[in-house]
Amino acid sequence: MNIKSKHSKKHNNKHSVVVTYGLKIGLMSALLLGLVGCGNNKVSQDLKNSVKANQMASNLMAWETSEAHPENVFSNWRAEAAEGAAQKEKIADEICEHLPQLDGQSLTVFEHEIANPENRDLLAECQELLQNNLENYYTSQRSGAGTNNFRFEPTVLKRDLSNGYYAVTADVGPKEVILTFDDGPSGAYTETILSALREVEAKAIFFALGKAVRANPNILKKVAADGHAIGSHSVNHPCMGCGKVSHESALAEIRGGHQAIYDTLGWVDPFFRFPYGSATPALKSFLRQNQVAEFFWAVDTEDWKAQSNETLVRNTMQRLNARGRGVLLFHDIQRKTAEVMPQLLRELYRNGYKIVLLESSNPNARYNSSLVRQNRPLP
Image 1 (cartoon, rainbow, N blue to C red):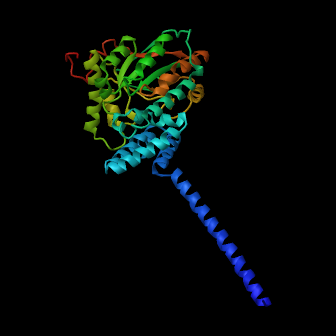
Image 2: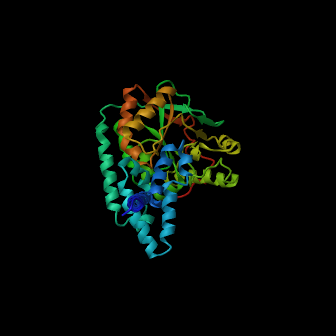
Image 3: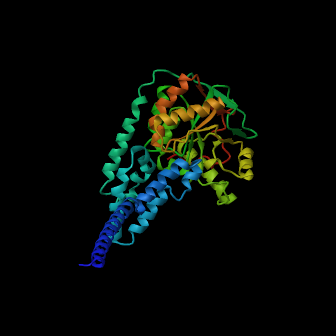
């Protein structure tokens, strides 16, 4: 063999090695891409987007109107599942593969949808597992729980509402707070919150939704029996200052919320909180004309956000200490709120805060609301 032939053979062998190595690299890359794709399919990405959106939302309205909100995500999945049996099985399998992999805190973002009967078919294979995972998470968060042996001194403050009233701090004194709970009554969590408040003799204002009152009238009666104030939060929780609800529809929401409470209790406190705190000047004027106090808040506890009990309590106390007093915003439809309430009440007490209750200076105001049709038979 001549020198040229030897060189040619050596070159061909080298080329074969390069090609073989290149094929191996290509196959490995394809495999890795496939694995990445499996870990980032649509369901998995939807879940990640929801968790991120929850953490990034600056307020409740931003969260509830997000396309990544679980209510929208599950609605889209149900629509896809309705395309056929094969698609339904595929979506359900992917959900039950990825949703249980979330850590407990992230899983709480989807808690309402896990319990939603509309999603029963999609979650049939993993609903029990998901519920167990949630229970395990909440159990792990109860290290700060326990019996509260202290009592708050009952304090009631009267306010003249004849020309309306706007509450943020509610003119309370230093180290005085007003506890408020929106969106209930909840058949799942309101009674637990009532128990925590009763234990320390704390009174609060509950801003009830008309649709929730109609669904859970007996729960509302328990709120009233414990001596709490009860105002309205509309019927369906629309954003009244966002330009999507007509003035007439907004008035119907205000009146309807009051009516639902009045029909259930025979009274309704002259208190109202606009959903998301959003209102038009005309609606604010309407409340003033009808001698109804409008409640905003000084501290948003962000109990709708996925966070540990410790984080919620710490952040709430930091915000409150910065303000020194005022109205605290909670939601009694959130399990997180029910779980953390004993711990939060303990921190308020330890930090020297007094819990006060606001009432109209007119003792007949709750019985003579101009927003309701009176003398209707109680259910």
